[in-house]
Image: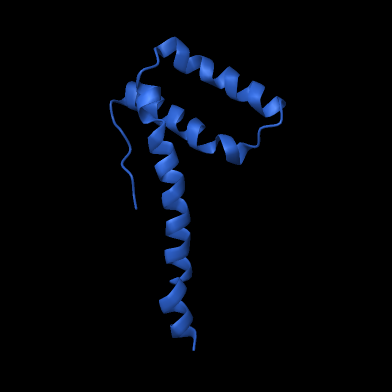
Length: 86
């Protein structure tokens, strides 16, 4: 009986990967915007994130944009872009 539900809804891992894949898509949507920022503008994102948290934005709501900013910072400083795993 469990195999019927697994076939219909997927295994727990498959469901989690679908959820994470949606977050990865949101992160990737910010990539071009982050690349177009100057180094100073990218640094100012930290202050912007702090202000948004103080105004009541949840960390989960900011996660994709914040991760995109960190990924862009790493790309600039290390010369490497982390790859997407899906």
